[in-house]
Image (cartoon, rainbow, N blue to C red; front, side, top):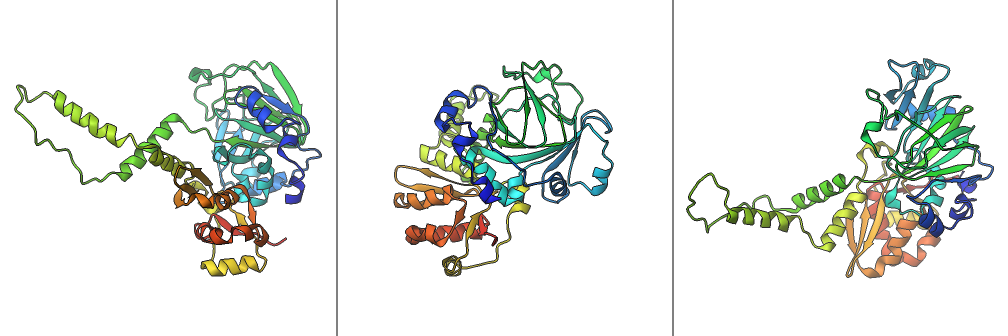
Length: 397
């Protein structure tokens, strides 16, 4: 499978556009349909295998029943059972499985051409299956998405003009289905076709045949979540034993007044606490953006304990290490230090180790020849990643 997906690169999946042109003209601006972005595509995951994944613990799966449930557009959560599938109606339903590339590491190869978008922005590869007529309704996503037709045919209808209206949805449903949907563009996608949609574009996909669609979705943190994360981190860094003091207190005319001097002191305390320097703020962002998703814990390996010398010996003798797809690694270069993040942990390094850190963030697999130029620095970092479950030994083919 890896060799198959390795045939495609970024420019090919963008229909001949360079990444620079795509980002300039389309990213978060307007939709783009690329016919045969993945030529002669044959889905390596069958509908039966996807259904099997939806039955596994630790895998985030959902079932949408437009008809045949307790109410229209009923949403059910997995893991499911064989009986759940046997009880489904002949039509009017969909199954969706998120984070498939984390459950099936070999699928990461299809995400690779999309890494012209920074890793911290990439969320997951979701797979959906529907019988003829199946859909999840007309809706709006608040994040960018590439929709790859993997099997069968699906009709996509969109409203080109983005929408963001909280009153636009039908009340009382499990899903946010649009009350009114007036598409101005329609395409029928075949296996290998790719549709990019920026945030806010209303869209509706309906299976024309039994079909599977793969969605490469992107993280779009809410501003409130970002501010909350920074504030939480700053609070964690504060000394809880330091308390408010006022040795300069004077008698007030009215004990019920909160005085201007008290307000000034309180304001100063808060402003000082929530105004970190740039270096501290960068570290907080790096830790937060790479924080491990605890809902995906089951998709991390249980690595056997190894000391660094044993790890190095095994790789030297031919073993290959592989990034765990769920692991989040990134780096930030500061003026005097390099911050390397492994699933929320920050390792502070010298600027001279940038080439090593770039290798660990860029590549998915690591063998002895690739690591040889980095011998002096790479092994302590690899061992740290291994101990945290961010890398594992690749399975032998």
